[in-house]
Image 1 (cartoon, rainbow, N blue to C red):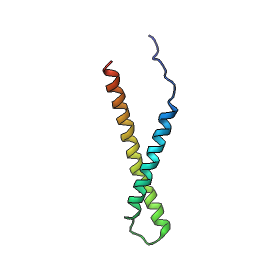
Image 2: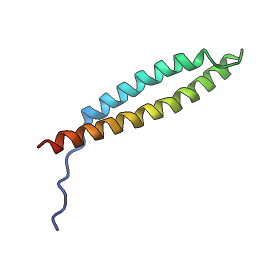
Image 3: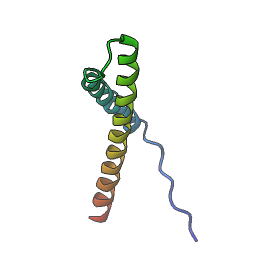
Length: 78
């Protein structure tokens, strides 16, 4: 059996993903930060960051699934 063809790792795609995830984290952090029920700034930063991190992880998974489906649809048209 022939082994599948290996494609080089797309560095540009990784950079774009990191920028999008960074922007999403910033947006989520600003949204979640105002909803932390505390007066201590350290706790607000901690729980705001943890909540934004979880939401950013879900965003990253959704982004990867969207890219995979797009690649499959593009390849199936050929």
